[in-house]
Structure formats: structure tokens, C-alpha cells
Image (cartoon, rainbow, N blue to C red):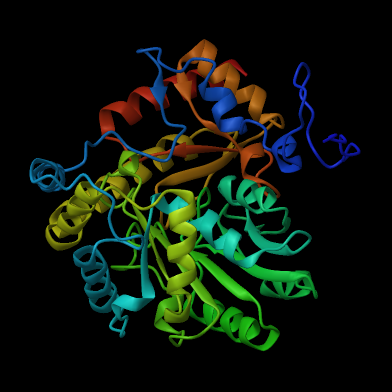
Length: 404
């Protein structure tokens, strides 16, 4: 039998020295500017790392202990694709008490982190050539996930007010939707801006999605990290059980569990089997014993969560007071999440600026170029750390600003 080599496909990626090609979207998945900055000095002990979306608190002991007991009990085998029944029940109860709604267990699927929740949702909704409207500036991984399934990211940038805060022109979102749009992605409270969508805006967007038959992918990972109310407005408070809504969430931020890689989706019950299949193909599920820790976070973590919110509130205020005193800095007091996204007069290439900060001043910030349209000219600082680390980093940032 003779084998005939297929004609070259220009959409695929050919790496030098390899005799076979790779998937086309791989070519567009370059290293993010955040990693590009971090890898220049990563691991150096004297660097103050304020670039990634995590603080300096270790996961609380009652969460770690629950996971350890699960491991000691032998919970190390394959388990339910959508999460162990106890965790899904705990997530259902948590959602119901948080938003005063009904949220039965069959609407909950556990994922390997919030990132996998995003990727699974893109796999579920997007065919090649479909587009997804994304409110930006935005954490870059939604862009990569959409491209990986050969979808087209289409951005609507937030507008910046004179005081440095952010606002969304919903009409721009509506105008960006066309016949190939399958989903609208909104992260609220937002990374990197801290912008938070109002209930009225959510209602208008949900009404639009119903009429147009498009999905809303609502990233609500920072819902508990808000400083003006107990929890941020959620689409779950407005939507019916079968509305075109996927709400993505994670244990990473509220309970200092970034390395655990546990998240969850709240979705119409009819999608349960589809998500089970996707989880099976991608990871076969979250390790059983780790899910024990997630249950402990939900059931025993209120005091820790309150501590985290106050810690971030104080950190955000410290950063705001220090940097707003700098004449070249444009910055707003954060209303939610744990980032300051600010600009420096005269700095246009923030990737080069952040590399300089990392190499010469030993402080790590994230360049605005990483966050898509609307992010250019800004830098992101994560203030989810204690005052000592933040003060040390701010001293170095101020020294760099004075040297500009």
C-alpha cells in the first residue's frame, strides 16, 4: 500500500526541523507579555512579585487538612467527571445562600480551575469561524482559548472616565454581535481593571442575549472580592435556569487556592452530559482528595474570606495613596478584584517599562499590552499581598518613576 502525503495546509504550523506540521492556532499562541516579563527574573529571591493574580497567603490550614485527610483515606482514584456529589451539593448550597436563588445540583459542574471552565465553554459553544465578543481589557487566556478552537475574538474596550475609573458602553457590545457571534464574554469584577458591571447593565445584556440567541459567558471569579457590598452583582440573580448563560468561577482567589486548580461552572441542567464528556476528554476530572479541601473552603471559609477582603482593601488603598501622589501616574481607587491598572505619563511601551522595572528595580508588574484593546499604556499591580511586601515594591516603583 502506498501512502500519499497530503497537500500542505497554509493554516497549519510548520516548525523548522520537524517533518510534520502542527495545528494552525498554535502559531498564534505566543507567550503572554506577563510571562515574558516574569521569566526575565523569575526565581530571583530579591524580586517583589506583583505581576501574577495571587497574593502571599498560603491556603488556610483547614482546607489543606481536609485534602490531606482525603488523601490519607485513599481517595486517589478516578472519580465523578463533574465533581464528587458532596462538592456539587456544597456549591449548590453556597450559590443559593449567596444569591438567594434556587440552584440545584444538576446545574453545577466542577472543573480543573477557572481556566478549564473557560476552555470547556469555548469547546462547547464555538465552531471554526464563529466569533466571541469580549469586553476588554481582559485577562489574556480567554483570547487564547477562543483561538485554540478556531474562534475569532472580537473586542469591545471599556471607556476610561476622567477620574481614571472604567465604564462600559453596552451599545458597542450590541453593535459587535453579528450572525456568527455565539457568545459574549464578560469578566465582572474585572481583571485587570476592577470594573464591576451593574445589575441594570447585566439585565440589559441578558435581555439582548435572549433575543439574539447568543450565550453569555460570565467570569465571576472575583465576585467575593468587592469593597462596597458583600458580593458583586451576578447574572445568576436575574437568569432563569434555562437561559443562555454560563457562569464561570474558581476557588483560586477568595480562598488563596491558586495552585489547587479547582473551579466550577453554573449552567443550564441540560448541558450536564455535554460538560461531563468534555471533562472526560480534557482531564477526567479534579482529583478526589483535592475536592475535599474545596468543600472545607465553602463550609468553613467565611472568616478567612473576610480576612482576605480586608487584606485586599487595605492593600488597594495603600497602593492608591502611594501612587496617586506621583504626578505622572493616573490611577483610580479600586472598587473590586485585587488589581490597580494605572498609566504613567510618558510611558507608551509598557512591556519595555515592566522589563526595566523587573531587571533594574527588582519589582514585577504586568504590562497593559497583555490585556488586549484598552490595556495599552497601562500596567497592572496585584495588591493581594501584605503591607510589607507592597511597601517594598512601591518604594522601588517610586524610585523608577523618579528616574524616568
